Image: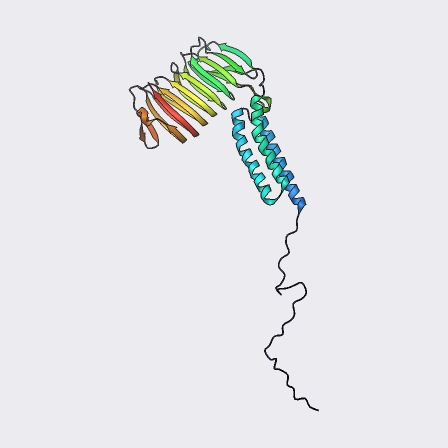
Amino acid sequence: MASDIQRPDTTGVTAVQPDPPGDPGGYPPGPAPPRARPGAYWTGLVVLAAGLAVTVATLATRVTSIVQTILLAIPLALIGIGLERVGRGTGRGSLRAVGALLLVVAVVGPLVLSLSSPAPAVTASSSQPVPSGADRAELRATLGGGQLRIQPGASGLYAADLRSPGQPGTQVTTADDLAVLDLRAPVQRGVLARNRGNDWRVQLNTSLDWQVDVSAGAVTADLDLRQLDLRGVSVQSGVSRLAVRLGDPAAEVPVDLQLSTGLVDLYLPRSATVEVRVEGLSIDNLRDQGFSRDADAWRAQGTGTGRYLVRVRTSAARIRLHRG
């Protein structure tokens, strides 16, 4: 018996397959999530902690003043705050602990060092007559942090009272008509050794032509050179307060002052011709003292035959010029 039931036409119709169990959307599976790798995290954390420990230890044994310690503790504190915030955001308590520990070291370290007692000081008095045949002299003073005062009045080549954390070095050498005076502070071992700052007072002979070179760290210096026949002045220092007192120049005298930051007081006679160039960020009173700006230099015309060529290099400083 033939059936008269007709089947529907399925031409062009795509059969729909049922979704497999566990795949409600029918989309292809996405990439697998990254596997947790706690070993890599802890390895990185140990390396980070070791690097920070070496950095702190190096600063403690190489930095030789409380001022420098505070300046370097600021970025360490910022790193500690950053690590603590990152650890909190990622839910890593160990990272937060490292950041908190670094912050405590950066804050408490300079405070503890500043309250501890420094090592006892050594005071040395030194002098020497003017070498035979010497017409010129050069002072090379190398000290760390502390105080330095240079003034005229020595009957010989020089007379010095040097108060330092150890025995300072003094040496005089000659070459033809040049006498070189070399004063060196003892080696400082870092703030863990609690160095006492240097306190130097040096007198120079006024009958010679002098070149004065000073290299220091954080220092308070008063260079009274008004009665000296100068041929040049050079000062390199860290965070410092400098007072440089100059007389009438007999020739063209370069004055090079370089400091990281601080205060510079420059005393000049009104009769001296002066050219001042400043490199770096500074606040000054040159215009108020009668200087005119010409290109990249400040100039003031005097009545004398010589002139000073002053160059101040700093990252940030206040410069006060006094003309009297």
